[in-house]
Length: 417
Image (cartoon, rainbow, N blue to C red; front, side, top):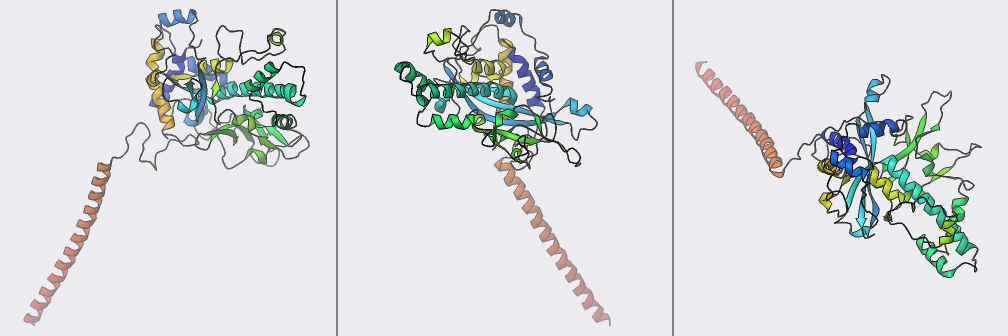
């Protein structure tokens, strides 16, 4: 199990200084992971308990997507690059929850809130849904398309429910998935890693790249256009569909159907489903890695991966199954307040959709500044209006005195003449 305190330390730096170092999440992922672990010093007790392989039981919880957020921060590699247009790189974060009782609609107590980089989130969830989609179509083909009467009816009904298969629609849906490329579409999950979509060759234009971005104020994840090979600088003025082509040069479009599953109405149970056909499983015909049934726990691999990689905010939400009551994890618990504060800053609108710090429009200030109070606004308005009033009165008084002086002088001059 990883040392979660390391990621919490990174969050602590980022919360105190919005320009904390950032690494490319694609080309330098190994460096990124090493940076997360830098400075993590487990206590004697925590190391002992890690060796005891203590694991949190999250089998009774479900994953719920909350928010995707970009954060622009100081990047030491960009700072060392004399040709870089800026020293600010882009960090990508996803906030998700573990909700109890598989009921994500009432996730307001006994839940955990977590922060993970976008690459790790998509790697875990996309793998899960790709495998789910494959099993769904296999089940559809076995019990709907072929209408095989020789299959055990009870077993078939259970598998249809397990993969939420509707025989009235699944055949057409699975045919669309199978014939996606023939119909002029490319799965958007092909661009989870940053890759070139436009090579300028000899026309003098800059190359363009595609990778995941946060969209619609962080409520969605889609594939966007970037100006660099590490996908650090997004270009919101361009669309990926305008640049991707098939082998013959024909225009193709992205299908976001699978990618949408990772953020729209997510409520993915972490509990391993039961295997209905034990003989099939024993023969190795159903190799579902996400069920992860080789483990002693009852948690699917996706949830294990996300929980292991994430910075955690649990105790304040009454999360019953976390580390708060387990002796030996004081280092992690000591970081929770910092982690919770940083996640709150992401959710409260400290950064805009492109990761820039918001410094206007909401009376907010970067670096922990407080917003203007109602009393302060009234006092400021009163002071401004009072100053303007005094200026007008002074002008009027000056005008009267000037006119009065001229009248007296004129009268005096007439008498002497």
